[in-house]
Image (tube, rainbow, N blue to C red; front, top):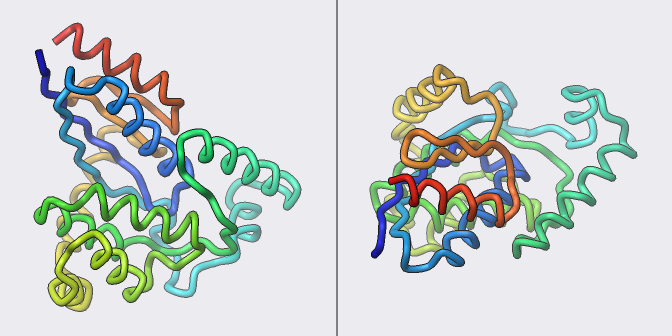
Length: 213
């Protein structure tokens, strides 16, 4: 018997562990197969809400924010590349960190069009694999068009500031619920999985939730 499952994922395009976690989640669902009918809804979180449009050098940014040395940053990035490869996500060289608010506005619209998850994966690859600026409107438009969204409508959404209030409201909602780090994956509105967990962790959690339903 197929059981329905609501999965809410709070994440940011700029977050490498969000790319790992979302890839792991999808692999876990593929393992479970027809036993689950999962509806994944993505919600916004900004790691760098005050960052300007020019972005910041990633070594300077991580060093300032987390107090890490360039050597520690290189080690961390190597580990993330390895974890990404294990779930089929290829990390490339990332030299800068960027503001992602416009990406979240476009993702909000994409949800209304039934293309939110494909667009999120396209944006994660654009930034983490290809090193592109996920705040750049042309990058956003290319990703939208690549997943079958209407480019002219996407351009209007970005140009007119559409869904800004909706994104801010969702960000505030999850902050008030205690989500202060991402990815945060919530099953059926009750069960929280924190971080970019391995496929096995997602699979086990989902099977437990289905068994208890």
